[in-house]
Length: 192
Image (spheres, helix red, strand yellow):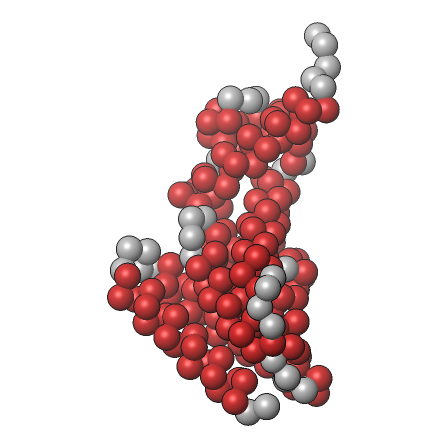
């Protein structure tokens, strides 16, 4: 049997990842099965394990891809925005990106439990939290307060995202969440 080309292997891995993302978001980590993911992706269970080693490994890849998408949305929203406005634009982009599609369930509900606290924190620190820290620094937050304010605002935004994710079609809740975020940002930036 001929071996798949590198492009074919990458396409298969991507199809598995996309299918797993949908399954983990729809069913949660515990109820999603590798067999169902493989069947939906049109591959064997062995192909899933070849590309991702294990169900936790597959979930870790799904979570990492979701964190990258959220961080990319923040970076895009702040690319041409200076100082405090970048913090505001990036924070709102975070809230929209993490509550769009599959990200909230994967990253905020199942992520800490499946990945473990340390790995989950590392993923956040390398993505959205890094963008938040940069935004706070550019907004003039003194370095002596940067760690604490990054942690506080990150936690508040994650909780706000969970609250909003529980109301996916509620446009009034979305407006309320963005207004609440503005009040938090006003409090953080007005003190400096």
